[in-house]
Amino acid sequence: MNQLFTRFSSVMSFAAGQPLAFILAVVVVIVWSVTGPLFSYSETWQLIINTGTTIVTFLMVFLIQNGQNRDSAAMQAKLDELVRAVRSAREEFIGIEHLAEKEITKIRDELEKQVGARVDKQRTADETVDQLLRRQ
Image (tube, rainbow, N blue to C red; front, top):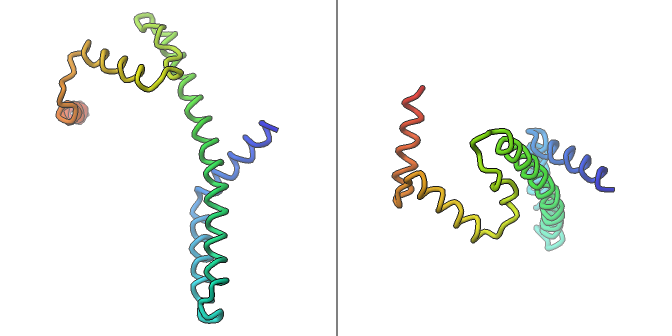
């Protein structure tokens, strides 16, 4: 069941991200809009688009979340492998994604202190971007 949902989720997420899916959605909205006068802009006419978009949105939330969960887990496994493979890296960092947000923030703040990061993070970020652009 899990394998089937993963495959289905991947196919549907890929299909939903294609230009044709967007064009189809626009066509549906245009057809719905054009039919408004035919149905005197009735409540049923409005209910059709409201119900349709709600159902599609509800189902897409699960597909998108499934894809994000898989992508995140794959990225974490890759990062863990890099930490494991680099001799000077601290293996204690493997698995920290399972810690609470407060604990992760504490670790990140300590790491920033160790590398001398300034309190003014935006200025530090701007300087970093400038340094990276100068390397090209």
